[in-house]
Image (cartoon, rainbow, N blue to C red; front, side, top):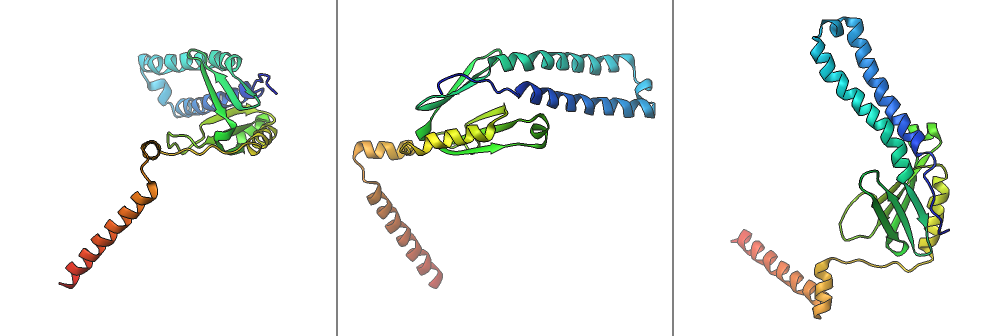
Length: 199
């Protein structure tokens, strides 16, 4: 409680992803070598393809532990906080009373390294469909989900409304009377359409 924790399996998970990508590239290179296509290529083509790939994998190998060192999360009394970022530091804070759904997931690769992920969905203004926050590479992902849900259940949900609805409430406009007026207008349009069909 109120302490920062590391997603302890994050480096294993990311290195496993890197290993799969590297294996796929090596399979393609192996097929090209066996068929003889690789040896017929110009040396500049091999350099143009090989050097960027080597640089990309070297960068990825450096970036994974650097990202792990920057990634921490904690559960406070009122909110969940998650900070991360190698070059650009990000800190996401999610109040428990905004959380609408918490899901725990474990794909085949995560299962292989003994990790999972926790997705936090909120009733935000953005209208986004995916999780607002996902913590990857945690070993006790089910336990984290249960802890968050326990904190969410102890709080009253905070409803969110569209900016138009909030403005109407602030200006004293009755939303129900707006709905009634819209319904009456739709009935009038329907009657006109039915008269047009019978004419």
